[in-house]
Image (cartoon, rainbow, N blue to C red; front, side):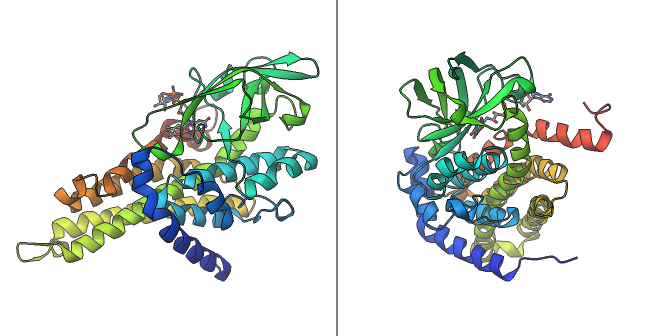
Length: 381
Ligand SMILES: Cc1cc2nc3c(=O)[nH]c(=O)nc-3n(C[C@H](O)[C@H](O)[C@H](O)COP(=O)(O)OP(=O)(O)OC[C@H]3O[C@@H](n4cnc5c(N)ncnc54)[C@H](O)[C@@H]3O)c2cc1C
């Protein structure tokens, strides 16, 4: 068993960490307060290759493996987990497109995602269908040789700023087989956007999108008609582990802060870290965090090896956000009153990681996937 990063991965990890500490960390709290995504952010990330990680080199990307993508997500998220949404959605959409679109479509769509001139959103959830996405209602109504998109999507990360979206729409009958995916220009005047006012992830511009007869042709159809749902589910198997590492990154930053505070803050005449009541909870959280991190990387490593990775990725999806929340909570308590003010990033970190207990599939949905594997389909809830 070989366990560890190779030289290239370690070098890349250090480069991303240095970029994130210098360019992203200083804006983490101010972007949250302003509830906005800085317009220069996509190009900044693209400048160091972070929006093209899963894009083949011939389309301007890095063709990075899944583990390397996870490393980038972890390091970026230590500094600014909200900036990492851009990395995440670019990687997820790239995987969906590369796995399903034609070479001609990829040449049209991928280079601008890689160079940061296009922000693409993943547009699946609807007001009436979240976990039950296979039953989504937004219709692609036949219109000449193409369709018109009619209906509403909600809870779309980067929805306020995205230029394009992989939009899932019903082209056929009920259920998963009636769902197709389209790559859609969201600047069409028939797309209306409404911002959502969130507890966490406030800088990502989560939004509702209303489609009022947006025209799409076969040129925008991703893969075969009726194959859209399968393509997004395959993408989720991968993105769920990346999300796990985003949460791990936030928690690692919080834990580092708490350990440093435990070394320097004094109470009863000695550093608080010398009190077991302070040190042991941090040790317990560090242990859980290490377990969550290993699980995420196992899922990504398995994907890179071409092995089944859905079980580990879905275990990671429920375990990592919950664990990260507990770690940040403990870190905040370690700071006492100094952690409670909004000048400390810890409260924001708590809000930001909690979003991932819902985003990209809730804990219950991840557990359903794992239960099917453990119990067998006929016995699972
Ligand atoms: C920060 C954030 C970012 C997001 N970004 C995107 C995005 O970019 N694109 C996008 O398309 N969507 C996005 N979402 C939406 C997200 O994917 C959905 O919120 C999620 O899939 C859950 O759907 P729902 O909110 O409609 O909850 P529901 O499906 O209504 O579920 C409500 C509750 O019931 C539980 N539940 C439902 N069914 C079952 C069951 N069978 N067994 C047990 N429990 C069940 C759920 O776990 C949940 O607790 C985002 C959400 C958040 C919070």
